[in-house]
Image (cartoon, rainbow, N blue to C red; front, top):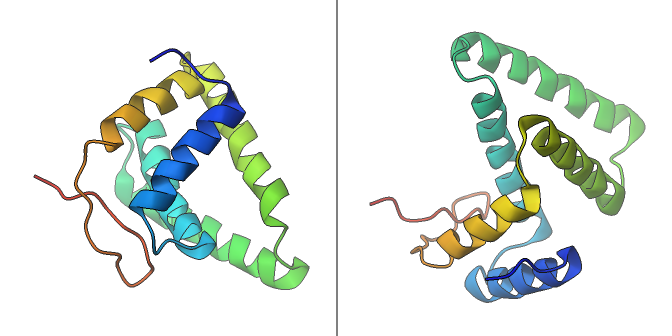
Length: 128
């Protein structure tokens, strides 16, 4: 599959995801993103003590929640752009194409079986 422009890829993936995860909401998508972000942090800290990392992440999360409570939550568009730009910077520093990885992952997830939404509305793939 030749690489698509980002807007086209977003549309194609979004259409597939909407058809596949019919009960998803912006909240469940954000909660799923949070879980994937934790996995990303763990991958970036490969070889580190995960107990220490867990304590650090718990502290980070608590501080961010307090900040949201005190300052108000940001708008979802600009906050999403922050995440996207940080992903681009991480990918550049690690030497991979984020869009290339996204194309490969999309091809992989299309063939997966999916479970029912959990209490947070997040749907995980069925593990074999």
